[in-house]
Length: 442
Image 1 (cartoon, rainbow, N blue to C red):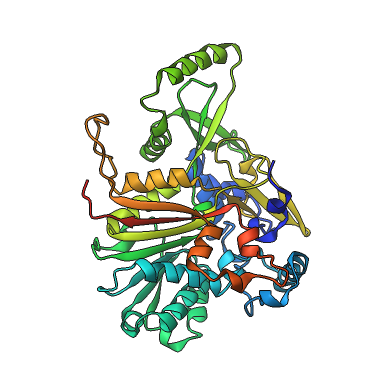
Image 2: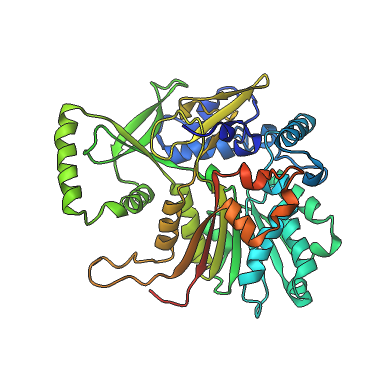
């Protein structure tokens, strides 16, 4: 059972705003053809007319000014202040980079400045930049702390799928006039390879803050512990608006690849593992237990695209490694949550998501690391796994958010009078993933 604070602190759970959508299921599953779960999730979240992130789902919260933590007595005072902010702004949620501005973005900028190759112009891409708070914070930090030539020659490109947020980012960054010549917004889908143009071999940085949690996922199912996995598809029941699952043998290339990466640690099992697997086979015949697993196929597609378009990129991703109170079954299952009449409702079935609910996935950072290596040609073509030790093309590290902030940030800036620090104390279910290219060639 998760500690109570993980479920009660508003910053740790993004709560959807309720916005009724009539006959949304007909928009999710067009016609009578089944769709993969990832297509259902993508439509439920991003459909321009019905999706949760459409205009009527409400904007990402933007604070009028930074929170002055040193003027708050402690946790109780902070929670009361946060509650007032949510009521005042009447929004769905505040991102960590917003709650802890400018210090959260400054820590990210410091990590880049410490490790970047400054002999070439600095180029930063941010995917899903929200209201532009991170972009402005990073540009502010570079203007104040980087050598003048670094700031003057740098480029910051936001890749944003939402047209309304793209406009908001320009407004936020434009608060400092000199930033505008360095900042651009590209309104497009970051997973679409064609949007990136020709391959760019130059070093660059890619930022993804709370992006992985809302990327489309697929679902696989098995009737027992040993039967092969099957893809889950969604279709209408006899042409009605009601939806149901359909199970098919693995055939989609993206699902198959992602499932293979997840299963990599099960290859070359030891004798003990073989005996355990045999025992499970016998047990499953007597007591069959269905299995379900959610696969981050959206993450796989995005990293495929990024490594193809930006082979020398360095990556910084931050997200939730654990979510409390998830009632939907399956490994890496999402939290599906909506809000009606001021009350939060967690759904037991992901098919309940009808444009009024956030479908919010935890990130398995070990799996993220495997996908990152896989997409950067880490042993992808080395079929004979026992012939030699693969050469890694990436150097990676996973850090708790507190460790990242203590290494690169200024934790004293988010500390209250009695020593309580919400950034370090409350965000224990979030992590940072850093990945940089090596000089090794696979």
